Length: 488
Image (cartoon, rainbow, N blue to C red; front, side, top):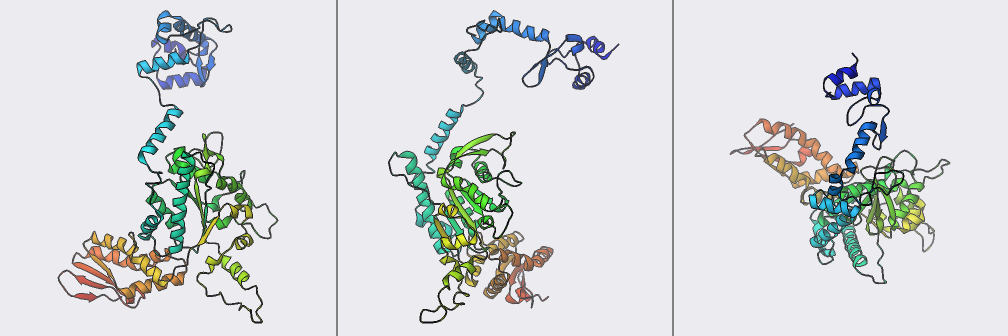
């Protein structure tokens, strides 16, 4: 007795393993009656890779011709198809009415979904001009998180306010005057707060924000991310809502890494080619964007995003740009009444504020790219006083974070003013901006965070300058006793 006869003796019931084994050894299996080709004859393959025998297919046709079935679905024009006698087409209106009556509507159409999004947006008033904070209020909110950089905060506050006024005006009015958007380019040394400024701004406005890294971008067809990947991240940040994504903010960091390579004979697939690929996105165009992926391929669904109302903010450290600016400023003769000393700007901390478009062109940015970033401004390099303020003044200051950590162990953490100055001085030596502050604090707080939980009698820990300079230890105060200096 073969396997198929055994199957029939069991009454036509089989497990999934039996079906797979028969399919593997005897050929195709009918999806409906589970018979093999050796028993049911040649199989018919329908879309989806499903195989059905001729008997089951005929039964399905007979079922469709049944009067009760036809009356249920209200089929119209039955039998008009010459090539398939006895078959008819379902009227879409009748099918929709049937689904509505039986409550089987599978989902909302794209038009209804878009209308719901618009109604939700109008009811929330998120992009209403009257609800958008004025520039001075935006800057005041930024002041609570970002220390210094007054000019940069003023510029970005005005730019964002005008941008969303433009979005609302161009959407709701048919005036002949159409306000163009003003993308921004932020220039500043590492650790001065470029990314933190944009991230804080996004939280305050509650708009979708995508932070992309230009170092991963390459020309289409090469290994790396296409330029459309920055919009894929924005779409993901907006919950795959195209309407929300089209009014979001895109911050492209490390933009200086796509500058033209000087004196190279190889194809510049991650430099000038990427700048040219970003041109249409920055200007405003209909862009095909993959959903849930960073590259286009046949297996990823696509959607279209209009970048006309997306605000693009580019940022970069541009190392070596200071030398280009100094060279331009000291081009005049070094002899005579109008002479200019060659080292006149060597110690200028605000040299980046004197940047021009010509300096950026010489650095390697193409003119078409610079033209699409009309607002160019620089952030100041952090000095000692700014670093001290960053340690203790922001709402999410580093010292406040560690004070909260020790407070969970019922221990009070205090810092001397001289200790804060010592931390700032050490951070200036490392020349990595505000990022150096956490690195320094992590180093000297390691032993404290390790030793304090051992002793329940410790009540206060005070950090001194001597401890920061490795010349002494912190001052430990036990509960109900005098402070004691711990050396080591």
